[in-house]
Length: 305
Image 1 (spheres, rainbow, N blue to C red):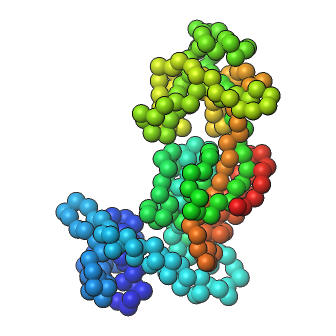
Image 2 (cartoon, rainbow, N blue to C red; image 1 turned 90 degrees about the horizontal axis):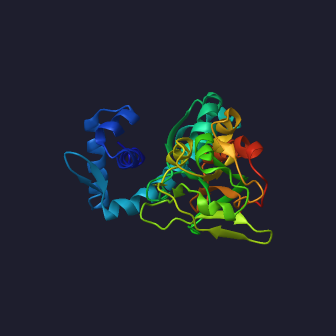
């Protein structure tokens, strides 16, 4: 194999954590992929992968090479297609991450249309509420809901999601429907934290001048959007959640909106990608598609920073 093919084999193994899965993705024999990586390690003069019988992991040198190799191969693909005018000729793999709710409600149902327009693309979609490491885990872009905590990435702000307060009819039948903030002292909040063990933030509300937080009791703490909504549906307490994620449950009467006069702060929705001189065309096209897809569901805010 030539040097580019060796790099491509190395990237597939690193991303999939397996020579077998990498060979399947490349359509090559496993032995050919193994030889290609060995040849690359010989040429680089260092070990790039830790190999065990159960998994394959990047070494420290392998981690340094990983992102450089991705950038190089992306640039090569862009050069090969720089004079193409038809975006249907886009080729390659896209690895993206977003919340499970956005994936389930918005992106996945319309993904067939996108792939029909771009049949040469393959998409690896991670639907998780965990804050992934975009660079280390090899993501092309991340669709994030909520405040940002990493200023080393390029951020394209798409808008904000309206947040509603709601609870199930069974919960309200048991505890009553609150109409004031004072009434919340006799209620329960389903607590949400990104990592179990963190201190829950409480009930957020706008007092007419600024957003404040009211500490509330609650018997259940979750760390996923799906678990958060499920806890409310089970009657375990009040939640504050983007309207988009519970609109069907509200429409069907499975959840009831409460205290609309005390909304939580809208949640920003942002596309994140790594600092790069040239963003691959397939990534730009995907991000533009996602932005257009979400636009009807968002409140407008500013653009890129």
